[in-house]
Length: 120
Image 1 (cartoon, rainbow, N blue to C red):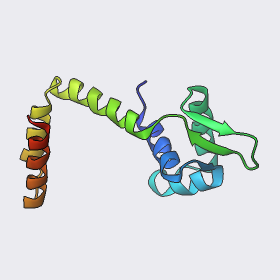
Image 2: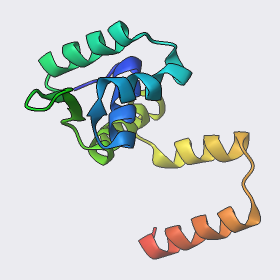
Image 3: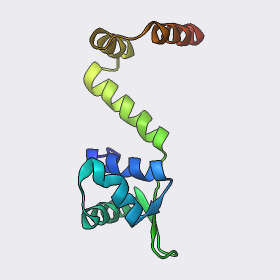
Image 4: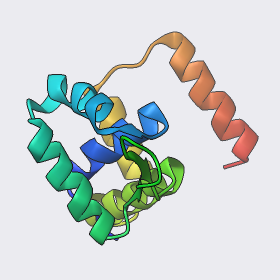
C-alpha cells in the first residue's frame, strides 16, 4: 500500500508515541502540521477505515495505534523510491547522494566497513 505524505506524518506520530490518545497526538502533530483536533481525528478515522490505524475504544479516552510496522513501511518506501527514481540501481542512488552531500571521514570509514562486511 502506498502511503500519502500525511499518512506518513500521522504514522510517525503513532510510532513515536507508541500509540496514544487523541490529545497527545494533536500535541505531537501540531508543531509540524498546525492541524486542529478535528483534522487529526479525521485522519485517524480515515486511516482506521484503510486498516492503517487501530482505535482502542475500550479505553476512555480512546487510544490510537499504528497497525503497520515502521521498518516494513520504510523498506517498502525505499524500494519504491529506488525503482521509481533510479531504475533499481542502488549504486546510482548512493553515488548521487555522495556527490551532493559530503560525508565525514568517520562516515566514509563506516560505509567502507559496511561494504566490506557485505562482500560487495
